[in-house]
Image 1 (spheres, rainbow, N blue to C red):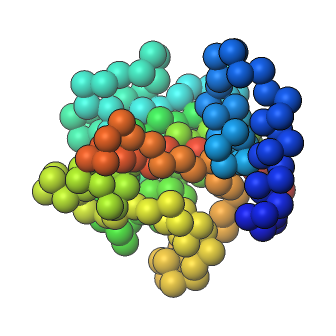
Image 2: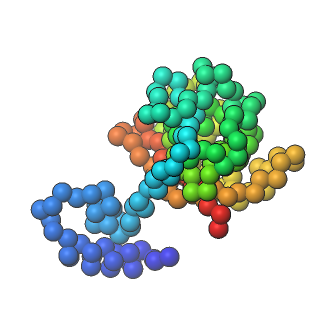
Length: 194
């Protein structure tokens, strides 16, 4: 881990070689301003396995299978209706904040169970400090950039009936929003055997 002075030197060296008239990528901008790289996102494996859209509502994503109350699935009470290792990717936009805190680890573990090796779980939730979190009375769990790390490392989140052995790893976590009101966490988890 670099200290802030080393990061400043890295940014200065990188900026000196930057062509200022080109259109910057997000990664360019982060390197110029903060001396940090934005990790490239992992793609959902291109195999014959399906993708799921948890909490889809009316926002269907391509040919992903929608799973929510409207489509007959209650995440608080039921397992994901797919066999272990038989899903390539999962979209969960505006879903996990509607799960009670005591059920979040179990639902994450269900996502892990159905994902194939290399499978990707893409999560978007409102940041706990944004206006979006308290404005919706159906939000049940608060999310912060350290929430996933805390769930994966904290033995107190384990259900006594279930031993969570995590094979998901956090690949990326971004705080993004156009204005403060809609700050969200964009989290990418990958099922990794290592």
